[in-house]
Each structure stands twice: as structure tokens, then as C-alpha cells.
Amino acid sequence: MKYISGKILTKEGFQKGYLKINENKIIEVEKGISPSRPIVKGLILPTLINMHTHIGDSFIKDRGVALPRNIEELVAPPGGIKHKLLKEASEKEIITGIKKSIDVMKRNGTKIFCDFRENGISGIQQLKKALESSRISPVTLSRPSNLYYNKKEMDLLLENSDGIGLSSISDWDYSEIIKVAKHVKNKKKFFAIHASERVREDIDSILDLKPDFLIHMIKAYESDLIRVKENNIPIVVCTRANSFFGLRPNLDLMKKLRINILFGTDNAMLATPNILEEINFVINNFKTFKKSELLFKISYEPRKALNLDCNILSPNSKAEFVVVDEKTLKPLYVSA
Image 1 (cartoon, rainbow, N blue to C red):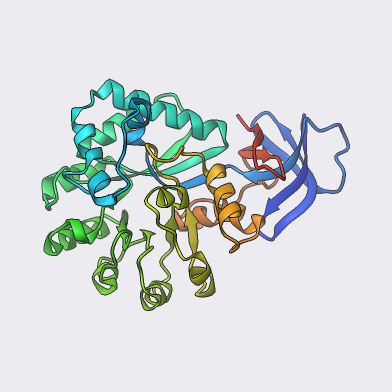
Image 2: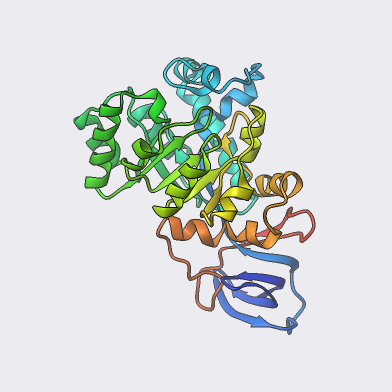
């Protein structure tokens, strides 16, 4: 038996107490002082969820390429520098980069990551190869290999992924993107899309696609955000990657409107896929949320958004948790 002591993040907030664990199972979750010397003390959190990654471009960071601070020039499909480098790179180079990012996430207590997969079916296969024998779980949102609807390709993508994650309505002919979204919904899979990141995009056109969640919404008007709230759609923000382009999400307004804000790390070529570093960046650069609120938004809240089991850190549940230092949020212990 092992004991873990500190402040436990529950659905009602932090409570002082301890976990009693046996192998890969939580036996007890109790208030008060541990009856035996704990192996570690700190903030005890459910394993974490990174709600937006692009880890396929991890290799670009290792190349030391000078990256432009212009979104369209860097990441817009099909001509962005990122997409050119992805086409030029060998599969081995891409997979090696993905494995490095997976290792970063595992070391920092991330159990699930929601990855936007470029390069059609080959992008899905690359991720699967990188994840062989790994206990970290992806929510794989694939992407058509071209900016138009192809029923045969869509069937193949959705057979092998959890849904579709697109760049933005600005990159597509809207009639084509409607076909994609309808196909996804017919298959009852996730549909997500970047929205109003570099320019404001028409919110009605976005909402007509019935997205499960939106990424960024930096250039959105208040009226746009109100419509998102009315439709109860979460917004995933990626503050470190945004800052690379000189952008800053309006977290204060989003919170005021009671929008469900979640967090991701975005492109691995810009920011390490360490969701705890993301939260520290938010703490240091925004005054919107308490630390406990932010930690809730990378543990319990994304599980709800992804329709996952929230019965965690409870007796008889799997021992899936991370213990972090209360001040720095650096991991002290990650369950196996």
C-alpha cells in the first residue's frame, strides 16, 4: 500500500486529505492526515487533458527553423510553411518528433490529448505508430488531405479517428465545409474548428456547422461570444502559442459571459505540449482565474466536454493522478 497526501482536487474543489493506493487502484480517499508516511505530498490532481495539440509538427522545433510571426504565412493550409515542411519531412522524422512530444506529456501527467491531425489517413497512421505501447490516449481529430469534401476519404478518416478538426472557414469554400460537417455529425463523431483566430469570422456560418468546440476565438466580437454561450459550445484557448503571434484571448470577457473555457498548447513547434506550463503562463499573464479554477479546466471540465468518465480520484477508481508542487505546479509524482 502507498499513501499520497496533500490537497485533493475534487468536483467541489480542493480538500485536504490523502489517497491510499494499491498497485493501479485507489483504495481510499479520505480527509485528514495520512495514517502512514506518504510517498509524496502536494496538490493531487486527476490526470490532465490537453484540449488542443498539433504534435505532428514537433520535428520543426528540432530543425531550428526561423518561424515567421504571421499566422497565415506559418500555418494556413495548404501553402503555410508548416504544411510545406510536413510534406518534405520523412515519416521517421515526423514520428520521432511526435514521440518526443508524447514523452513530454506523459512526464507531466497528461493522460489524454486532443490532436488535430494533418495529412489525411497517413497523419492518423503516423500518430498510431508513435503511440504504440504508450498508455497516453489521443482524441484524434483527423483532417481531409485537401480543402474539399471527398465522401470516400471522409468515411476512411472517420473509421480511423474520433472526428474531424479543421483549420477555419476562411480556408475553405463554405459549401465544401458544410458537407464535411454534416458527414461528421451523421457518423456521430466530434467536429471542431479553429475560429476567429487571425481575423473575425462570421459566427452564424461557424455555428451552422454545429461544432462540438471551437479553438481560439481571439478576434470574436462580444456578440459572437454571446452566441457561442447561447449554444453552450466550449472554447479552447492556447495562450502561449497565441502570444507568439502577438495575440491575446479575452479571457475576462469569456469568463464574464460564463463560457466554458478549456486549454490547449497548440503547435508543438511553438510551445511544448506541457499543459501545466500553459496554466503557469495564464497565471502569470492573466488575472482571470484562480489556480484551482484553472486546474479544474485541465482535468474535470475537458472530461465533460469529451463525454469521458468523471468518476476519478474516488475509491475503486484507477490510480490515474498527478501530484504537483503547490507553488510551481511542477510534477512531483505521476501515477504509472
